[in-house]
Amino acid sequence: MKKGNEYEVVITGYEFPNKGITYIDERKVTVKGAFEGQKVRIRITKTKNGKGEGRLLEVLERSADETGTPMCKHFGICGGCTYQTYTYGKQLEIKERQVRKLLDEVCDDYVWEGILGSPVVDGYRNKMEFSFGDEFKDGPLALGLHRKGSFYDLVTMEDCKIVDSDYNQIVACTLQHFAERNIPYFKKMSHVGSLRHLVVRQTARSKELLINLVVSSQINGQAEQVATIDELKKYLDLDVWVEALKALKLHGTVAGVLLTVNDSLADVVQSDEAHLLYGQDSIYEEILGLKFRITPFSFFQTNSLGAEVLYEKARSYVGDTSNQVVFDLYSGTGTIAQMLAPVAKKVVGVEIIEEAVESAKENAVLNQLDNCEFIAGDVLKVLDDLTELPDMIVLDPPRDGIHPKALNKIINYGVKRMVYISCKPTSLARDLITLQAAGYKAEKVCSVDMFPWTANVETVVLLVKTGKSNI
Image (cartoon, rainbow, N blue to C red; front, side, top):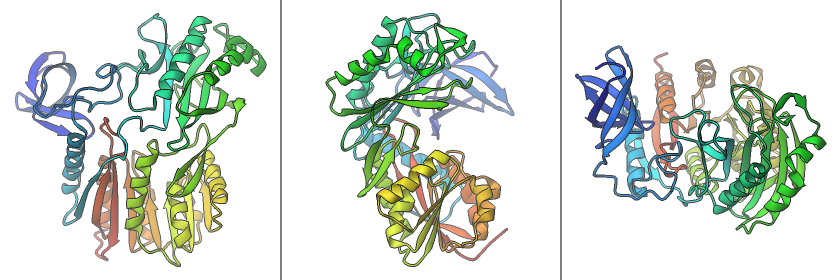
């Protein structure tokens, strides 16, 4: 097996996230995007320590399990959904098998409560970040998602199936408006151009839409020509764009349109300053009877109805919190904290993103909850300053899991029960090794599919203190 060589192989295994496994010359090779049972053509891109990585070039034969028909015209080109050749039931089986394999390697004697599917599998996403660019070098303006395997090329999302069709209309309208005016997109290498991203959010129940156009402060493709907001509005002809959006025949209603200026050199969606072009600057989502204000940059679960399933399961694992102080660490906009507040003495949420903390505070007032405290800061540092002691801890960390030093501080509280909500089972498995060594046992586990057609899955674990520590 040599780097650069091409091989035809059969994928004999599958690992999270979305990695097919094969063997060449008795050496393990991982192939991103290949599924168990497929015959594929690959090119070796890396060899190290007796293992290799291969790039998928072509699927020569599909597996016997691939009985589904891709529902999206962009499937195989877009770098988004990967499971469209599988029925939804088979997708759940694959995800369940992956999570159990990871947990079985680190846990003993836990109760597996299965995987819960999403209440909706089509049009479930409530937020999309579309990028401006081109479909090929120096091609016409595009607005959509990155082409599979490419950092630069885009696929214009004309008929994406994991969002409401309103999104597709908004993308088409926006692309037409700026293409007709020859407005250049912001180039990642030269840092010249105007158009950067289009962020669209929609509530699951009211179908209200919040549309946010993210641009640089440049006009006429000149990096040194920094414009005022009024100059930007005129250059981009935003009054006409807003009216075109309002005239669309949508399922929902356009609640607000915003212009965000971002002059960061990094290819990220962030705000240097935001300006309201029309309507309101936020929308309201309802989860399990509670209302949450969603701003353009608020963190919120991208599948609102799926989030209800996830939080119901988490709440059942938390159990009775009467007269207890609950720490909700990595609390986001405080969704979990506010679900627990009515049946707890107090809930303390800690979140590093300041805007999310401000939203959590506003949402607590909106829901008439006066026993929630939300603190902005890194969990690793904030825990040193807290004087209250928790009776119960809920953990909902980012994809990379919990910082080892923060995890040790959490363990040192010695609470009898913790609930860990994970969006990446490999990070969860790593953290469970430390938690179990500290005397916590994974008592019950359940996965929740928040992301149909993709390789991602959420997992909820109830951890119980046994008193036996190996640390």
